[in-house]
Length: 238
Ligand code: DC
Image (cartoon, rainbow, N blue to C red; front, top):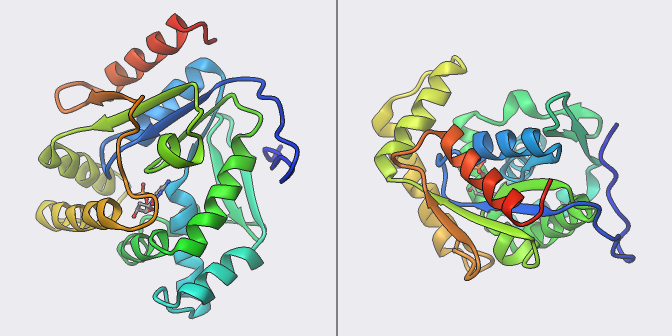
């Protein structure tokens, strides 16, 4: 069943905790978030998918991504749904259609960076993400989840890694999915997106003052997930 988007007004009492994972591109947030959610019996959502989905839709509809008003208006016209897979990952559907096949395209990646810097879009996505997480029992990964979307999240992790290692991980991921890629080009595109995320005026990528910073350069993503699960359990989580 689709995870219910909780009402706009009444803040629902959370049935479980919120685990916010933020950090730069290619650091392994999705793999780690998914592993943590599966072990705790939580749902998992990669919020980058939401920006990518809107970027894809804008391109498909011929709306220029630089047109801030038009892109924000487009976001509001679409029917957003988040349907869980058997592994408890929430997948984005727009107007009843899965957006998964379109999200990793390089054009969509570049456009998603512009879409994510659009203030109207960020306000829209933040409202959507808050409604999605209102009941708790969710692992949410992105750039501003611990700093802005859920500043009261029970657990906040800022995941980091050396840029060369991040580029290698993203490169392997792309190759494994059958996409053509060159390591140097992947590294450059990644640095460009990082810079956009760090420098944008509204909700840039930053470390929440109460986040636990984990460097995954020399750890496997399973080891990182283990650390987070231990942390949650130490604090009385499931
Ligand atoms: O994590 P990703 O690379 O799939 O994210 C796509 C874009 O969306 C990227 O430019 C960062 C941005 N993003 C964001 O600004 N805030 C989030 N919570 C998640 C992603």
